[in-house]
Structures are given as C-alpha cells and as structure tokens.
Image (cartoon, rainbow, N blue to C red; front, side):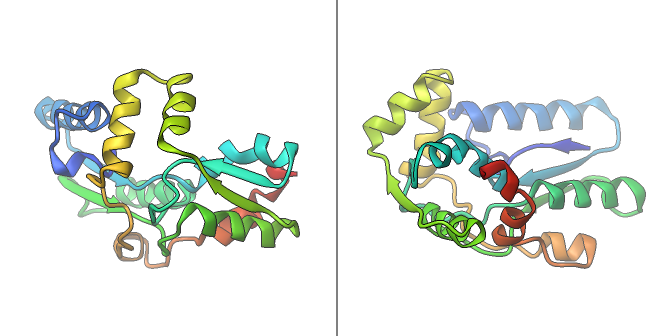
Length: 187
C-alpha cells in the first residue's frame, strides 16, 4: 500500500511534486511486492494552516482563490486503505480519491464560520504574495509545482469521484463534518 497523490496519474515528470509520487509508484511496482496505490486530492486537514489566521482575527488569506477542490478527509483515505489491506480484490489497483463536494477556499471558510459561529472572511492572496509565503517553507521547485497545478490549471482536483463509496460502501465525509470534528483546533 502506497499513499501517493492525485498528481501521479498524469505522469508529468517535469513537476517536482508529481515526479516524487510517480517515481515512488514506479519503485513499488518494480519491487515485485503486491501493491495498491491511493491517490487522494488535497486533504481537508490542510485547512489547519488557517488556525493562526483565525486566532489572530476573522480573515483567512490563502492562495488559488478561484480553484475548486474536492478535498478529502484523511479519515476517508485511511478507511479506503483499511479496506484494501483487509479484503480481496485491491492488489494492482490505483484508487483516485476525492471528497463529496467541490469547494473554493472561500466556501471552506464559510463552512468554518458556520461551524465556529464566527463572522469569517476569505481574502485570496496574490500570486506574488502566495509565492513569497510558500517559498519561506518549501523548496522553489515545490512552489513551482503547486503553481503549475493550481495557477496554471495542470491538476484538476475539482471532480467528485465515486471511489470512496465504491470501495467502502459509504459516502466520504463532507468538509462540514470534518470541520465539526476538528472545531476545537480553530478555537
């Protein structure tokens, strides 16, 4: 079992993030061991990056304001992994995983506002501000990779996929369900 990325299926070795996952999948395939790949979209838990914003005020600043993503709860990734590890028929399969709804960052902030009972606002960062902030915490080739994915539109994580339902027999959790479960982290 390898948790890979939604970027792996496109096979773009020029993108640093995609390349890492593509080469990891290749190594696992070539090892001769049985394998199953999980290729999830961005995690709902990435919203935890906003904790410091919400502790300082009521405005969340984030990049890629116009990009819809069907984020996935890590719980659902784990549930698919558990099913694949404990039942037959998953060997040699790659599972693209998404959550049940395609949301903009502002939509996710609105959900948090409802769950937290706060009047929150979303403000998209300019590409220059986003690049500077990201560059402070990750290598430049990774910053370029995320801009390629989301600013240039080379990775579409907006599609809601049926995979969690097909593998587990239940719908993936919504962002609101995730937010309710993790509301304490934002207070």
